[in-house]
Image 1 (cartoon, rainbow, N blue to C red):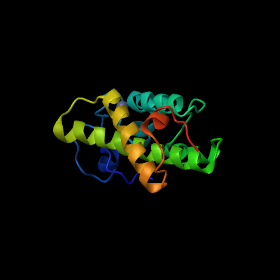
Image 2 (cartoon, rainbow, N blue to C red):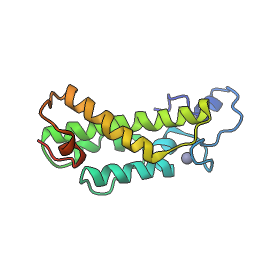
Image 3 (cartoon, rainbow, N blue to C red):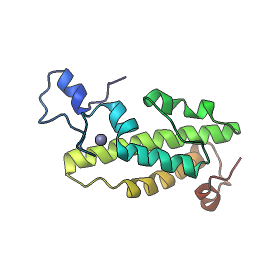
Image 4 (cartoon, helix red, strand yellow):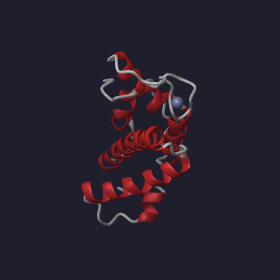
Length: 145
Ligand SMILES: [Zn+2]
């Protein structure tokens, strides 16, 4: 809902920002739809998630399409919950990568972020969904429930 303090959102609230460009790609104004959906770093992440979770290519026009992705996915209830968890972890990870680039001048590393998403989402699903028998090997191939 454009409540995240992206550069564009700050500029609209008359808070001065040096430039409004996306810190990840440097090519477009930083809005939340850009960072999480259309930035090529985000596109790479969603391609990877789709291939890992055996989903059809993820076509999103805004964040809402990502937040409702699990509802339109096929499969068991557990699988849908896992997909939703992965989407949330991915959005959080992209925002963290963006903040590290803005505040720590770190170079965005999408592949490193994707590794992190896989392990963080594993811990989340194992604990939150009580999937205690879930193994890392099955998770790595998105084979469960
Ligand atoms: Zn960008």
